[in-house]
Image (tube, rainbow, N blue to C red; front, side, top):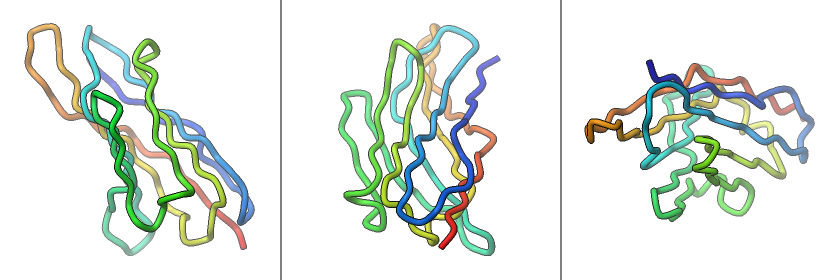
Length: 120
C-alpha cells in the first residue's frame, strides 16, 4: 500500500525557514507530478507549489521568491523549502502526488498534513 508521509513542520518566528519533506513508500512506483497545498483555519485549501516529472515548477503568487519545491527521485521524496516565512503562511501543509505503478496505471495520493505555524 502506497503512503505519502510529510515531515518538517513546526513553529518558527517570522522571517525564519522550514523545509518540508514528503516521502512516498510502498509498492513500486514513479512520481509524476507532485504538489504542496496548504489550508489555514476557516479557509479553502490552496495550491502552493507544483513540480512536474521533468522538474518544471510553478508557484502561487503569494510564495514566489520565498518557497522552492524540489524532488529527489532516488529517495521518492519531494521537498518544500520555505524561507522568509510570514504569519500568513501559517497553515496545515499537504503533499499530493500522482504515482505511476508498475502496472502502468497512475493514482493520486495525499499525505496526512503537517502543521506550520509562524509567529509574529
